[in-house]
Length: 429
Image 1 (tube, helix red, strand yellow):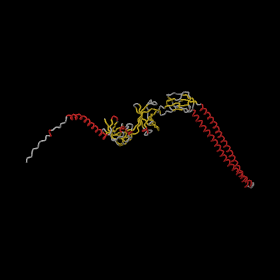
Image 2 (image 1 turned 60 degrees about the vertical axis):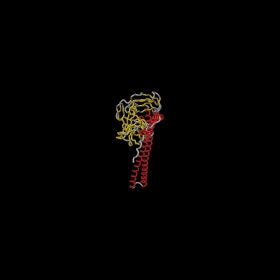
Image 3 (image 1 turned 30 degrees about the horizontal axis):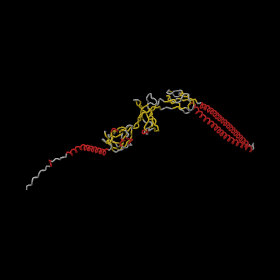
Image 4 (image 1 turned 120 degrees about the vertical axis):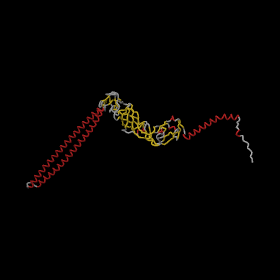
């Protein structure tokens, strides 16, 4: 059975025809649609940025450093001023008119007279005290003489008692022989025995009196001598004060600032002038409070003068913090530069510690801003907040105990802009 041949469809030959007005409207909206698609694409990119990197920051506002490995030298370097290790100020021990013998800048020798203060009050006091001493010493000498006389008198009485006892003993022996021969009566013998006993009592009493007389006289003489010695100490102090009216150089050096006016009256304990020891100089520096606790007397240091470096050591650390800084002094340990002057500016460096082969990164504000517990690690164009553990730090670097590896890059400055975000985007890096 033959089937009829199907009639071929003409759909393939058909073409869509758009009315002329509608074609014009399409051509008008095509540019707007393209712009809309571009905006949508941009929004998609921003959304993707928010999802993957949060906010974006310009790399020019940040400082990024690479983590490395090496020796970390903890040191302090600061500019200080030269001061004399010995720079005493001489004061007036009493009020009076001052006569200056030198002027500021004069070179002086130890013991040289620098100034004299006229104090009639002190000189009069010295004369009075010396007179009192002479009187007390005379009394002490008289007491010593009286003690000798008393001891001599007591000795004489003791000797007399011994003689009386010896005589009584001989009489008793004579009466005993006579009694044995029947020449004297027994009553006479008994009287001789009683006399001997009396002389024994007298001898014992004389001995005790001699001892007591000697002790009493010695005690009185000692008390008088102690009074004289006390007065002698008063005289010595008054004489010292009078001698101190003459101000002398305590060592070889140079006259510093003169604070008194020639022939003027100065008050007691008022400064007169200063003397500078030119043989020993130190450098006074200001150290940040955070480093001050690590400083110790005797720590090695170095002082730079021009192109030359001189070995030194820490000689003093102030216990007081002023404006976040602590004053410290560094002293030359071997030799010092020639021609140093008071208040000259020099650079001092103190080595606190050296840590060998540690992971470290450049020191920056991120340590304080993040408490040393976090850092932003740069990964491509993104910075990720990562916990770290910071160790020792120097002026230029900080040790990383954990959290970072050599070769990684860290935002060391500008992380305060991130507001503790977990992830930020960095543009222009």
